[in-house]
Image 1: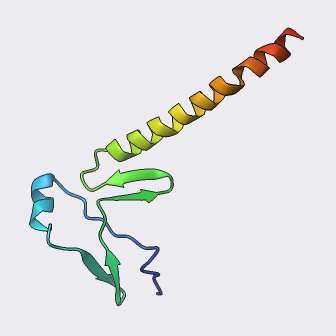
Image 2: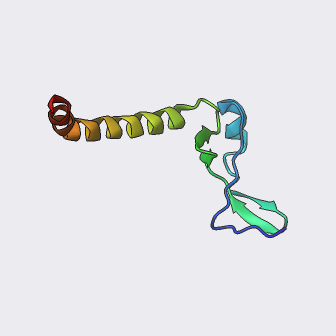
Length: 85
């Protein structure tokens, strides 16, 4: 199996107390390739953090929704004009 270390990330899941035990660990060896450990990873559009709180995913989702709502606000005038015709 060939892994690209620049595109691959590993994560440790656990309680904050358990994760402190592994705080010195910066990478892990998978199939002879060193993979960097991360605090959060994105898998199939969901962002998971090491404590499984879903906070990074919620923040990203909130930001994306807010961005799209603001873009709707910019075109709202044109939609209401077309509706009157």
